[in-house]
Length: 340
Image 1: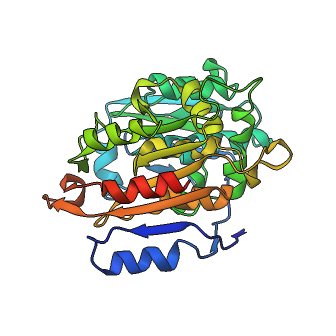
Image 2 (image 1 turned 180 degrees about the vertical axis):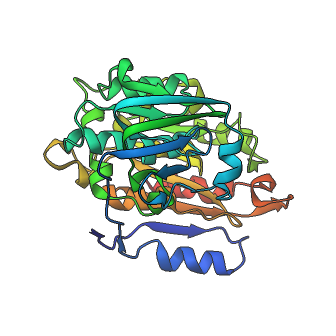
Image 3 (image 1 turned 45 degrees about the vertical axis):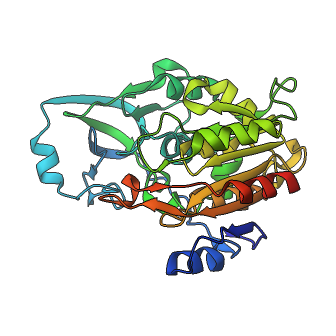
């Protein structure tokens, strides 16, 4: 499916020099893209290893894509297994090695569950997932998933499924090229009976608790945005229902690139169809010049949101990009959010 070209605002700090990454952002961010076709296998005997979620099919061997973000050495992964569980009922494999991250859980694992249920793929089948945290459990409940359908597979364990179903939705294909069908599946969760306490709010979602990609002047940014009428929140302190309500009802959301932006899936927009209510919030994503990840920009493209990317200067390099530090261009951010 082709997602048409759009017109996000890409704003660079004067302190950011030209680079290949910056050029690629300017070239790719507005461009149309083709989302990979969504595939579900026929029920078949499968062996899935906890932790990596590498999966072997009895008839065809290692399932393509199930080595996503692993080294692919399935023999070693299998040798580390100490516990085996047999599952006789139909079961959907709905995990990957990064499912603990809010973005990967929503956009890949929960997406596979929602699409399978909506399209009648093995209706009511069991769901094989990694060990779940509170927000993940809340998300399943919000989707109407009964707890008894869920089987949690821990590292060191493996599941032998007589009628296992795997999907490419949990693999890397969809991490940067979201499919409109998967995005639309979240609209059914987001529909509210009434606006929430976030209706019309301007919100800065802080990453005070982050250990990666630290912004060195975040406290100052928060204070300056609050002086403009923003409320500062930390996403990890919000329950799942509040995260949905925030992205559904707020007028403007400013935040750094991070997993909280996965909640773009709950914003109203053109992809919502008959339930849509308009443009949704203005999303302002703060990037650092040496890590211009476009995952959330592409979600915004599917939803046709009002979206601005602000590219800010690095402050200090680390052993890798996730350990580097960067600095928000405060005057630039103020100008952008004031302009609306």
